[in-house]
Image (cartoon, rainbow, N blue to C red):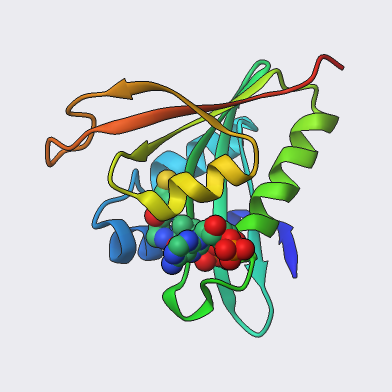
Length: 144
Ligand SMILES: CC(C)(COP(=O)(O)OP(=O)(O)OC[C@H]1O[C@@H](n2cnc3c(N)ncnc32)[C@H](O)[C@@H]1OP(=O)(O)O)[C@@H](O)C(=O)NCCC(=O)NCCS
């Protein structure tokens, strides 16, 4: 089941980000954005949570902060379902474009985003703390 993100999900998300990516913007940061109403997202949840997509909205622009699926639940279409739900929500919010940064070396994620209509439009050198590069990807919405 894919459901909207709740504030109670944030500690679990921060824990998983630290395990999967070795870093997180932190619970306090996310809680502040959530309280301000600019953070939203979706969680795949059944017996237990298995994945999440987290975004921030600034006017007509949505930035994907993070997307992950637990290793045990990968390759079952969950990331696709999370992103599809997000794109539909952006349509209802009249969002003009959705953007994200993904590691240049993360071929799996890049392929996933491309399959859902994201285009890599810019290369960002030294984007990550370890000095590695990112690709800036954008999903342009149809004019409503
Ligand atoms: C990237 C990630 C979110 C994909 O989650 P997922 O639920 O396994 O993805 P899906 O099952 O929806 O796969 C969708 C498509 O992505 C691509 N893909 C996913 N996993 C893949 C793999 N291991 N190898 C090749 N392609 C893969 C395929 O095109 C796949 O479609 P297909 O199964 O019909 O071939 C997951 O691997 C993950 O959490 N990785 C670590 C965190 C990360 O890199 N997040 C992205 C940060 S920008």
